[in-house]
Image 1 (cartoon, rainbow, N blue to C red):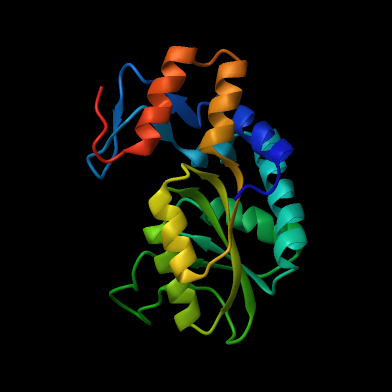
Image 2: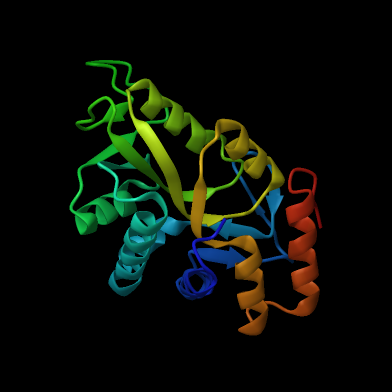
Length: 213
């Protein structure tokens, strides 16, 4: 679920402007999973544009406090959300931790890096939601460390049904700055894509694992 419509439209426009999101229905990208996709998203580009990273930082901070209450700690999911997570924590005046995909193989074998006390309220910051699996593994690691998860805030979601199901099963409240539906509406209105390309992009979202051109 998006935080609100205005934020969703503005975020989508900014992501398209800096090519953090690329739409190419005629020449699809191949994801690491092997899926063919007419969209590619790299939200880490936000960090290279000061005005846009400030917008994202401030929108996250405002909406996190409104929807979840001010937490004790902000947690970023490695590696994509470490940068933006730090920006949000700094803006909100809060401690920051980040979560590795798996525990380190050496030293203290941490999966959660930083100082986290049992019982602290945590909002998890993520850059991108596809199926939600890796994001929810981070949530589980935080819970295992004693955190009380208030919710997850992400920059963008593709809005796959499987992600909705996964978050509902995990009982994690997910809110995003923007999503696939608002992105497509904005892309058509600003002439990033044609009506025919819109249809292709909508078809992909229905069956992304089997879609081909």
